[in-house]
Length: 145
Image (tube, rainbow, N blue to C red; front, top):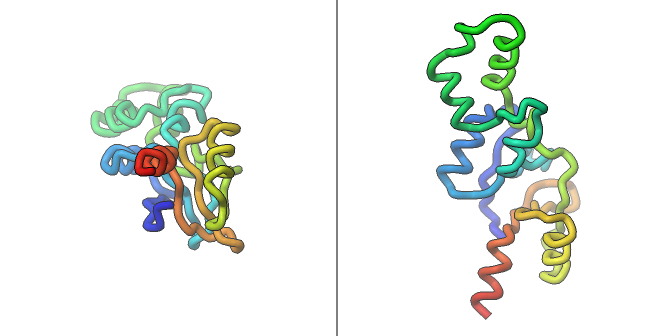
C-alpha cells in the first residue's frame, strides 16, 4: 500500500479535485474529515454523480473562467452555479469498500474483481486512513515476482 496518501476534504472544490487527479496522474482520492475516511472520488464520479452528466473538469473550469453563468438566465444559471460551486462531498462515493492494513493480497484481488474497483482505501480500526492500494500496485507486485 501507499502510506503517504493524497487526499481531499469534503469541502474541496471539484475543479481542485480534478486538478489533483491530473497533476499526480492518479485515478482517485479518498475524502477525509478529521483523519477519518468519509468517501472516495474516482475519475468516473465526475461523470456519473449528477443527472446532468456534465461534471467534466475542463467544462467546469471553462464556465468558471469565462463566467458564462452571468450570460444565461433562469434554470440554466442555477445549473451553472451548482456545477461551478460543487465540492467533493457532492460527487464522492460515501459507502467505500475498504480493507485493513493486514489484508492479504488474495483478498485485495478478490475485492478489486468483485467490485470492479481501481482503488481500495486502507483504514485502521478507528476508520482513520492508513493508506491506499491501487490496482496498479497489485500489477507491479506481480511484475516484480
